[in-house]
Amino acid sequence: MIEALSNKIAIHIKSVVPDHPASVPVLKHALAVTLNVIFITGSTILIALITGKVKEVAFAFLRQMTGGVHLKSGMSCVAVSTLLFTGQSVFSDRT
Image (cartoon, rainbow, N blue to C red; front, side, top):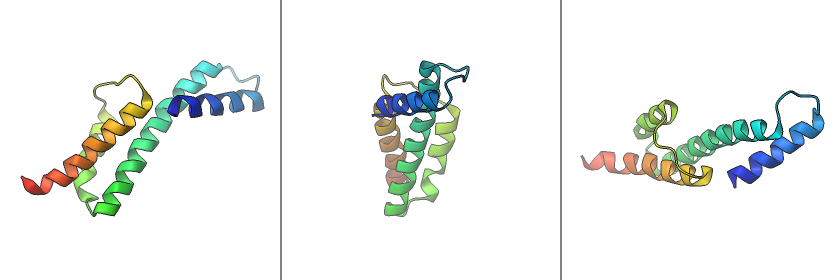
């Protein structure tokens, strides 16, 4: 999903500004990275708001900004990161 969306946006950008020095693959990669962070952050905040655990996900955002293990697809990264961040907020009460 992220790859397809970033490709579609990159193609559109290149069609609007054909003389831009960045190629479609370069734009696609930059957009995929940006969309990945937006989806992870947005999903985590939404779930935290629903569960009332906003304060508990602060460490997760630090983790998101500092990097970590890379997965093969953007959507798997979004799913795993969101599950880990949300899980951390749920289980933080039990320790």
